[in-house]
Amino acid sequence: MAATGSSKGSVLEKFGLQPVTKCSLAKFYVPALGAVSYTGLSINVMNPRLIVRIFPTTDITNLLLGSTFLGTGSYIYTREHLKNAPPANKIAYSAAGAVLLSFGSVLVWSILRSIIPPNSSLHTIAGIGSGIAFIKIGTSYLEFVDSQVVAKK
Image (cartoon, rainbow, N blue to C red; front, side):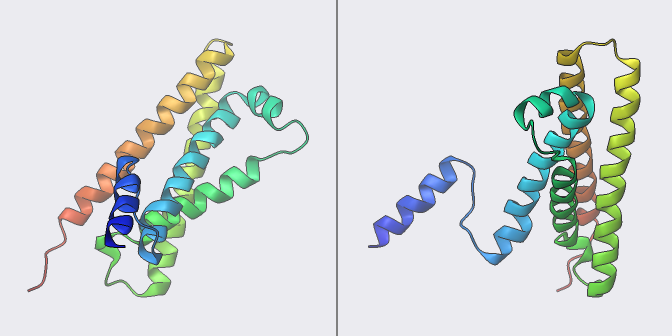
């Protein structure tokens, strides 16, 4: 029996996944969904015709934006530097960070789209590339802030 549980863990680990718990949902899976949605949002802004081809009858912009808010907010909410903040403040800080990242990115993508030559492939690559850069810079920043938290003994 124990071998079965460890083999499941090893399968998850092979794919870089974590066992599904309340903690991993908030710290890993919901933020991962947010990152995927954020990437979809970048494509939606930079190359809207591509998204319309995939989802011809439904505008998924608000779904992508909402999932991005949820994922980013969850990621910020669970960070070490906010551990001792009152829950209302953690929610406010997380929501503000999610909104600033998402709407700031939409603004940047809109500007990029207007200055990049009209080429849908180039727009898509620029959107995904800049989105990945924003995610990397943001996570790196929050890891730095968390590293500044002094551990109490």
